[in-house]
Length: 399
Image 1 (cartoon, one colour):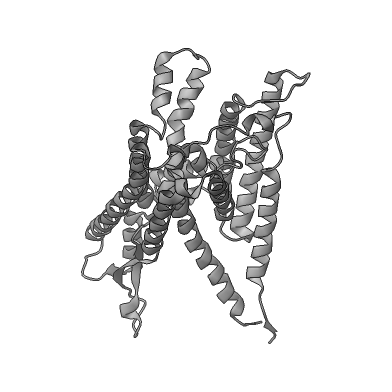
Image 2 (tube, rainbow, N blue to C red):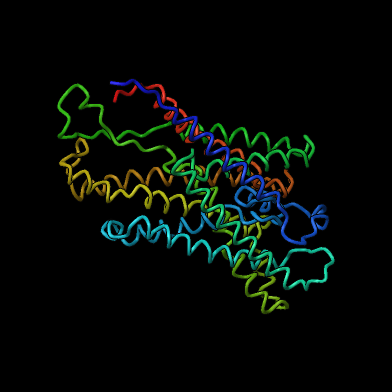
């Protein structure tokens, strides 16, 4: 027998660092003939700060301008579609086919987003017509989105964290850029909110609700230690992170129609309301967070399928009959957790938005505390994954 030592963590870290290096290069490559000087004095609002966490660059004029937003949005739509169709449909839907459909959907979304983004680009003086330059920019941004899609998939299989490192880079860049832009007096209240939100999210990420399970396959001292674990925040900060993507959908629709009817006062009025600096926009955003928290929790955790799997294995929740009663129990348990966590997320974000609307903090910083919330939320699972691979490397294997 030969004793061998693995270096899984080191290999995965190197692959992740290589992916991040490619990403950093792509987000610094300007689109063809774009004029970066035209964006230097552009006003930064709260929505732009939040979007920069998912997009490739703050001003969205590089090859990776669309960032991972098309990837995330298409993945979410596919998750919802697969959940609605049921477990049997998922068994017939091969992973290869799922990847092809997701890539096709992502490409369509990337093209639409690139067209809308290209409409506002400013180019340097050139012999080439601006419309041709916009078409070139659309092709560049779409290609960049496809490259990011491929890199994230490689990171999932061979790296660490999947899309998390890319989001982490954007979040840290967003933090650094925002802090440099404002004075301490302007940032003080927002930074206090950041600290509060980070502590709350870390607490929710590490508190587990344990549902004791009696497993027929375990008949020893560990039988009473088997349980289903649910976090106090079942899906963490995903609702806050993805709410911006969903909040942008009605904006993109209105902007699309404005391309054909630029002088419509109705469309302009609707578009003006769909902004996080208005009460209407803030209420819609908080509503999206609450709904996404509940929908994503039930889709990703699937209490009905969990109950069916327990019944198939002959296992049961202690004190609850298998079958319908287990389904109702798990639904009720998850509903209570989602109502609590969704309300808490809305309360935290509502504090920041309310202070912005009340003039206590700058409108540009209305969503800045969400940066700390997202940072705390993504660092926890990333740390756990790194810790798991480190433990794996500490084991000795015998062949």
